[in-house]
Length: 349
Ligand SMILES: [Zn+2]
Image (cartoon, rainbow, N blue to C red; front, side, top):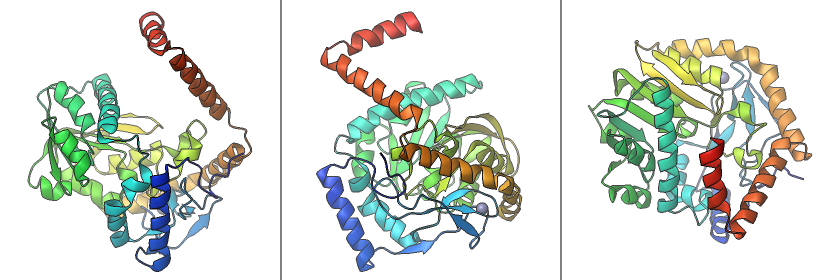
């Protein structure tokens, strides 16, 4: 029914399809080049392959398992220079369906921002009067929510179209990396929403982030969690740009090693942590990550089983989601959606 891990599993707009072809041409002609990737733990050579070799766009980006710390990572993908090139020229045209305009993304982000603020509130972190930085903020909708809650907000990213949309909402969004755009500035709260899994060297990156969070300040991270594959939208999960597949214990260990106390974490995967202590060295962290080698068989089998089940049509959540989507579409067509939403909010919650 599906062929996850072997071919494109999402519907593409004609413009996405064209951009994907251009990408493939760049790979064939050598304009973009790939390399073998190292694991976060530092392992460069000991890996085993899995059945996932192509991502949701049919781009070759094989998932391999590190035989030292057991993390499932993308084993071969664009090298550093090509990756930057790809993000500037190819990423949005391939990854964004035409309806995902800056306005659309901004509005989705505003909801996500409310959700983040609620998670912070649950662990007694307030936002009013705080300075908040989001790295990779896109059009800045998450920051808009923080701004409405009384925070002073800042963001940085690379896509000018997206950033200009947020700038129109009076959000201070700067072009470039956070450590150059906000040099010598530190913040009460830093937000990394679906960013860390894209970063080539996440430990180096977090070590820089740590320096820009005030003592006692907060780091909020959200990444896709691989241990929710059985619940997730499997046909959309695998993306070559997601270099690492994190899970709760692994991310918690990294954060604690950097001197953060983890106040909240789930497998979705969202984490809130507080900057309370000094960090271990990257070398120490890498050595200790090898203790996660204990998960090697369980995580490998989990991935293989879930992909096999999904491909043979045995994933319950897929049918549940289909049913929800069909019901939504029916209510929409009968113009009953907002009425049902209202009843749900007022009566059932
Ligand atoms: Zn590893």
